[in-house]
Amino acid sequence: MPHTVDLFIYPDCQLLDASGPWQVFASANTLLGRPHYELRLNAVEPGEVRTNGGMTLVATHALSTLTSTSRSSVTTHPADTLLVAGGHGVHDLDDEVIQMLAERAAATARVGSICTGAFALARTGLLDGRCVTTHWRQAERLAREFPEIDVAADALYRESAGIYTSAGVTAGMDLALALVAADHDHRLAGEVARELVMFLHRPGDQAQFSEGLHCQIASQGRLRTLIDQVLNDPLANWNSERMAQAIAVTPRHFQRLFRQQLQMTPIEFLTRLRLESARRLLAESDAPLTQIAEHCRIGGTEQLRRQFQRRYGLAPSAYRARFGRAVGNLETRDAS
Image (tube, rainbow, N blue to C red; front, side, top):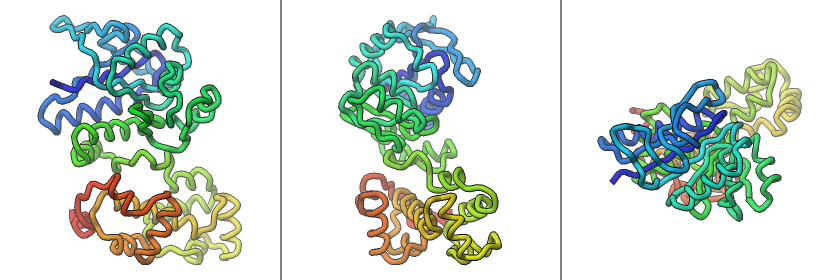
C-alpha cells in the first residue's frame, strides 16, 4: 500500500514550500519505478489556492474531510505523513483551521512543517517541549511567541519526538530527502538529489547559510570580489598574503579590512571553508581521513579531527556514521 503524504497549503503560502518537497517524493516514485508515495494537496477546502508568488495551486482534498474532488475515486484513508507549508499566510489561519489541523495531525503517524509552517504546528501545541527550527528570519518571533518551544535558529531541519520541522524554502527539500532516506535508504535520497540537480542532501544540523554565503552577504567592494574568487576555488593554495595581493593591498591593511567586514581573520575564513569541504566529503565519499585532510588542505588526520570537533561538536567518524552514504573514494569521484 502506498505511503500517503498530505501537504497542507493556504492562501499566501510559499510556492516552493509546497512544490519542492512534493517533487522530491514524486522523483522518488519515478526512481523506484512504482508509486510508493501517494501525494495529496490539502487546503481548507478543495480548489484554487493563490501562493505568495502569485502562482495558483489546486488543492484536491479538504483538510477536514479528506474527500477527493476527483470523479474517478474518493480517497478517505488517513495520511501517513502530514506536512504544513510555510508562507506569510500562516499567520492569518484562524482558530478553526488550527483545530482541524490539530485533529488531522493527531491521526497522522508522521507530522512536519516547512519554513514558517512551524507557527501553525506551534498553535496546535504539538511543538511544546520540542527542539524545532524555522526560517532564520522568523526564528526569533517563533521563540518569543511560543516560549515553551526550543528554537534551533540555525538548523536546516530537526526531528524531535517524531515531529519534523525545517528551515525556509529549499530546506523543505532537504527535509523531504531525509524522510525518503528514513523510508528507504540514503542511496535513494542521494539519487533523488542528483535527479533534481541539488548540490547534495544536506544534513539537518548544517547551518541554514554556508560560510561562503555569510561572507558574500557581509563583504563589499574589492573584498567581495576576492571572496567570490576564493569560493570559486576554495581548495586552491590560498593564504593571507596571496589574498592581499589579489586585491592589491598590504597584508596589514588586508587583515584590518577582513576583520572590519567579516569579524574574523582570513585564516579563520579559509579554515571554515575547508572544513565545509571536508564535511561534504565525509557525507558523500568513503575516503579515509588522511586523504580528506590532504585534499582539503587541513593538514594531517589529527588536525582534521581536532578542528572538526571544535567547529561542529562531533568527531569526523561520528559525523560520517550519521550522515555518510559511502559512495566512493575521491579518485572515483574525480573520475566520474
